[in-house]
Image (spheres, rainbow, N blue to C red):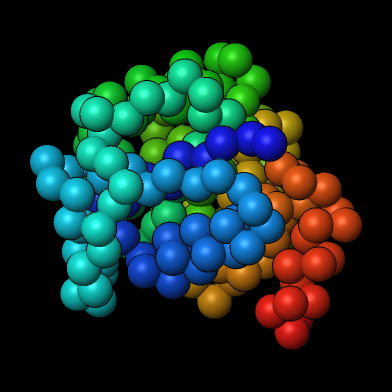
Length: 181
């Protein structure tokens, strides 16, 4: 089973981060939350403190196959300012590994040039940050190894699409039914 790393920066969108972690874990997918700040405690955009599993500097990404970036502001901006994370994303993309970002976070991928000539979605108003992408208003877009989601109200759609990509349609349907969706 693929291992997932979900990154938390101060100002992250709580719904996008926590719903995604919850739904992936319901599917028995291994998810580690990684703080890109100097402490494990990261505060969301709506002042909800969350304790990450690890801080970036102590994380081992050798077995990770999927990177997930929740949005929120200034969370997405803080992710975008973390050079180590951007190097990791670039490395993963070069290896064709799966990368997912929702809401404002696709701006990180856009800034790295990873969305050029790809279809992508994001929170309304961030389209200009998706350099070279064909922006669309779909809830979730998968183009090659990159998955993008539109925003907090669509976090379940985003997470369930990741479950489907990682563990298959049957598992997605089981988790979805368990959530009464």
